[in-house]
Image (cartoon, rainbow, N blue to C red; front, side):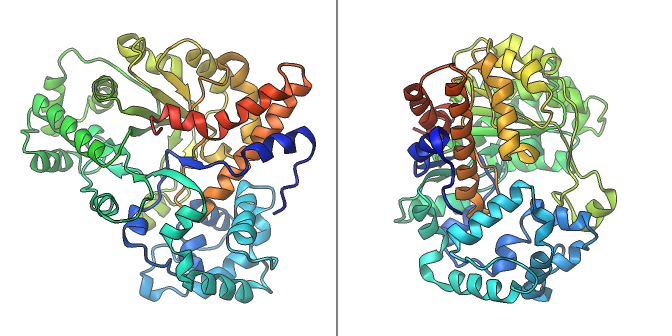
Length: 451
């Protein structure tokens, strides 16, 4: 892919094109960097883990089993899987997946052959040979990509053995965990009571009591911090917070199997997490507006995260009011809001972030991290929230090789946006060149405390 932006947009883009990559939120596997083993094969690298890819193929009638989903590794035929992907490559035209994958193939994998059913085997063989080169293992790629820091997402009960192994190695790459406690905060999660008991066993705290439960969470947060964590992450469908006057009573009822107040308890715990963030300095992230696993048949057969998570409308103002009126004026809290409901950008998020000291607006996420989605985002939030109330960019990916592609797309969009602002007379070209690094890297560093 050539660096084909021209004029002022191209000039601004070139200013940040090779800037370090700060990746403060994502879902890469820390084992890749702890073990530094070669990636398995082209299908395992590009198709099987990428829900953007297999959801599109499934929508066109390709069974997930044919893509290796839910199939034991020993029973997969990676070449056959890749052939299916290549023969359906045209389905991705017009989508950000086509942009990212084209970048990965040409820029990262150095494969100029046009992907198609006829070239599937040739492309597969070229990628397989590339993967076999010791110079293309995870740590070498991390350094070659110019990644300054990469954050993973890890459950509250995770022992972080891979992060410990990275810390104990002689490799200088910075891979940090992120504390994601949904499994122990949300009583609607399967096995919640057992997870709470496991939390107690890990920490030596009596998690049959609410006070012991809170202390156990503090200890786990502190453990994550010893391995470099700077943030928490919470995935919720609707941003509903509530302050319970007697949470210990609700907690006891929930442990006893009465889930009537499950949603209220989780809303209360989000405020508890915000209060703990003021204590320990963790940045708090809310990812909101995705109804998960809407295809019951696919969920029952293949489990979660199989492409059937769908955006829904949300109400940020009402939902966050209890949290903000309790802790939102604190200068020691940073709360980053991510939405899949684009209608809330101009109506709610930008005015909220333009007032509350704790709030920052996360970048376009999931279904909206495309060139058009980024343009819509800037158009709707900047005029009310400005630039310094944004959280910069994160790639939020499970596909490690797509990280440079995603950051490149963002940086191109930054160039286009800032050039448009200059052309409209809102500020000078010099100012645009100063704002570009802020949007490319500096805001993410600052907001996530990764400097």
